[in-house]
Image (tube, rainbow, N blue to C red; front, side):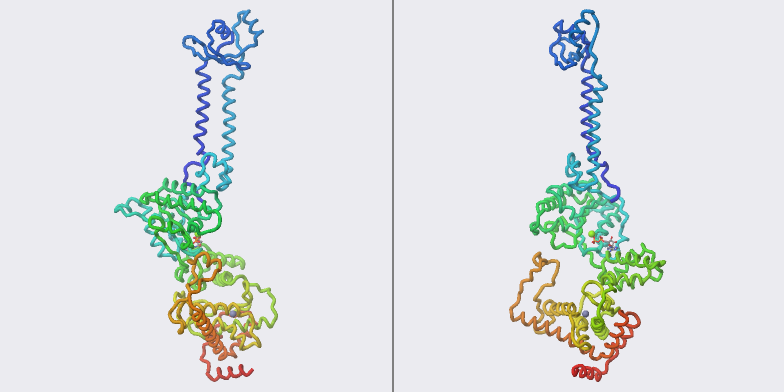
Length: 630
Ligand code: ADP
Ligand code: MG
Ligand code: ZN
């Protein structure tokens, strides 16, 4: 948070009370000093004797009252200070002009009024400050005078340094938001023809793709204040506070127009009403309703644009998405390779990188990474470089960091017996050789038997050379063959297969099932979908693991099972054939892997060349016969 836009600090908002106190005080003093005559006690006694006193109020040492006939130019109200009766008689007898001493006089009266007031105001200020540091309900002091306002605590940021240059790889989104920037820069000029800006724009995308960053960049680019709240802030509130906060948000933004109102993670707030069985519904509904009312209630020509961000647009209440509210959506996707290069370039500026650093090479290592992942990767690499006391961050720091981020931390110290290690080496080499032998599969970058992460005992790291959006049937079959290559290698070289292939089998089966049920790739079942893609669009029931309703007959179910089985068997057969034809290579390379623990670079390239070389049919047949006869 930078400097708040709200002009007055919150304790200043209590000024009406201070003013009222001062006024009362002034009136009191005025009344005391100017509309009352102070009579000497002796004169008072004379007035009594003359029957000129209409009424009195007697207190222990002070008498106030009315004169029936005030003296010329005097007031009818008077006050006098008593002298005790025996003394008064004596003094009267002696014809003395006398009066009692006022207790303190008006100055002390002033202090007796002002001091408590000052103390009160002081204590109150302290309470206000203290509560100002807490959030929401903690600050009971704020609630005394300005419920909603002080609790809302919406701060605007005026001087946002982030702009479009800091957000990379999302050119389409930026192009769409450029219009908003132009509008915010000159709202009048823009509404010249009566067109109005969309009131609300929803930024949609997976976590870490830069939604929050982009929203701030719009404000920074346009140079307008940025008022933001996070949907999750409303979750713990009492009824009414969230609504007050929303009201305050819009009120302040209108006061500072042109401005941006940003509601981050709006799904926490705008979840379809009644969709959640959990508590807090009333509060969320009230807040949501307030938000809807505010969005309807302002004219976008004023220059206020509402941005919101979510990674789950499908659970939003339909009312939020209708025209006139968040009717425009800007999608931010995981960056493609070019996008990753641009994002890396932004973040590499912030570290001391070696001149040889190649953003393109790093991007090639990181398919699927989001902007946040890449920012994290650059930081990890910088840390790695620091650890090895390097002068600058080099490519090797990135390679280690990628592996770290992708596969979890290396645990070299895990002890395994020799037999297990050999099984793992054979298994991983099986994956690798099948992948190498099949043209068009992702390049194998590294094979390792160093356990890392949970579950995986070794790994074969394949990296796509480009981002893919469509996969053909044969590519899917190749993938399945690679997945089953581990098990195939075990069955060829080892006496027994092991549990090491569990995850491979599961993934291969998933692929086969998807091919049969979703992609219409089984000849017998035809171009029919029997299952929807598992998507975040699914209702809550799917999240809870309730299976989808089966929409096909038992007969079809059986055909599906057979189809899946057929694909899996075919893939296993292909993998086995490939490995049988390269049995010697498999044995050699898995021995090498066993001693080296991990293989990459030139050694791996040499193995790959050998794997790709055409294998004489005779060898395949001979190996097959030898293995079967074993
Ligand atoms: P989201 O709100 O979509 O979850 P953020 O905007 O919070 O993601 O992004 C987190 C961080 O990741 C940003 O602060 C930024 O450092 C980095 N980042 C994400 N996307 C990008 C991008 N497109 N360009 C540059 N940096 C990005
Ligand atoms: Mg965010
Ligand atoms: Zn495996």
